[in-house]
Image 1 (tube, rainbow, N blue to C red):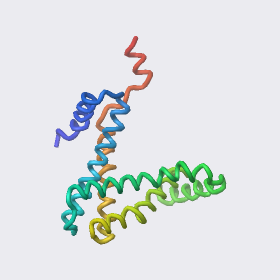
Image 2: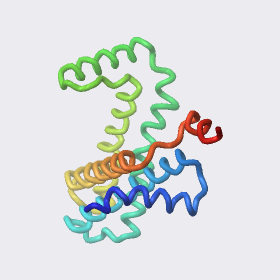
Image 3: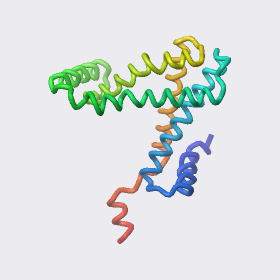
Image 4: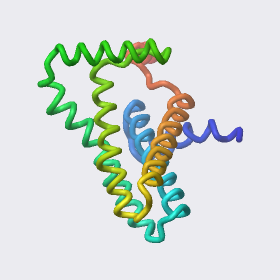
Length: 180
């Protein structure tokens, strides 16, 4: 268990060895790759061992890749096509609702943009990704939802572990100090 904190740093060093990028870009791609792998692993375990006879590795990778693309597509569409045209009073209303929910839940409020992007991600998962997984792997809808929630939770946990265990990317002040 003591080797677990060293794993992200080792992966980052290995990543930088084969792909010469800046430290910030290496952090980003390491987080993306680790998140996608954790989603694939969680989905494959749940779909393979709890009800799908046709959850072959190739089909799992294809289904997860399409699901991740569809999950990413909903916030992208919201960001590019809907947010610029939403009137200010609606954004103000979303901000007010977010502040009310934050006070009720004792949590920090989300800005309207973050709340709308999260809402679009949730709608995409419930109405597009989960039904696609259900039809593709012939599993009940609740198992498809649990599989995706477990995969996304695993991805968020892995990304958080990587962020907390890796050194921060150097800032411009650090680079200036090294040059002097």
